Image (cartoon, rainbow, N blue to C red; front, side, top):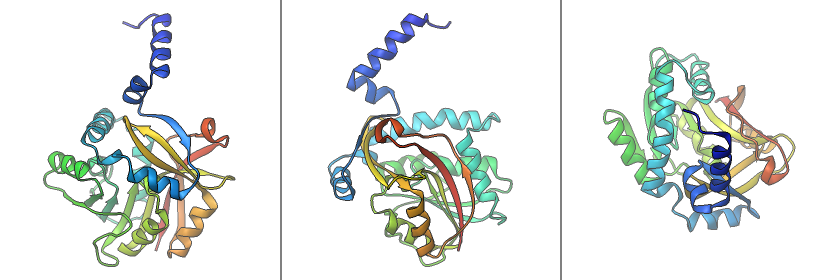
Amino acid sequence: MKLPRIVRTVGKHLINSTPILRRHILFSTDYRVLSGADEARNATATSGGWLAARTVARQERAYAELIRAMKAGEPRLDLKVAAEAVAATGIANPHVLEVGCGSGYYSDVFATLLKGGVRYTGVDYSDAMIARARAHYPSTEFDVADATKLPYEDAAFDIVFNGVSLMHIVDYPAAIREAARVASRYCIFHSVPVFADHPTTYLRKYAYGAPVVEVVFAKPELMSLCSEAGLRLEREWASTPYDVHGVTGHHSSTQTYLFAR
């Protein structure tokens, strides 16, 4: 039974006006613009963020419903776009490295939405994330690794897929170079928040109740860094809408990019 409108309105106001409730019920909240990369590095160093087990558990619960809907034939736009980007490479059963794999749910996405699937390896810098990934998908390969210093040889994978994690890496130029280095054929940067006409901006927010840093990229800068890393843009897709105008004063969109080596 639907709650009366006044109850819903009061409940929404209570959540939004109470920091503890707001941060633990809403997925993303309390945005603040940072002064630049140095402040972003300090904020990352002093917060548990993605390393905390409770953050992992909350993200896992949020994505569990998305995975159920996908398996019932109703995948959310970003999950469909991820599979389309991999399929667009034309490689049958490609060897895919996911950088920033979290609890490994994209291994499930590719197995479900891609005919023939992929040979999947996932890496994340968070031990807690990798522990959950291994528990959920025990037959899949997962490693703890830093996106800016990947422990793999050059051209070790057909595709490097950065799934919604580039935006949380302060040293994103190094992460782009490393993705290009270990990819033999393609790199996919998925669900990347970008400005069309505003400089790259660092934000601090609460995600799943934990303080994290987020980067919204100037698209020209992002394209330039990818080109310098030896990547050539082949296709792009609009992903799930994400507009930070309310905190930055500038509209953003979310894009998925397929680059060839």
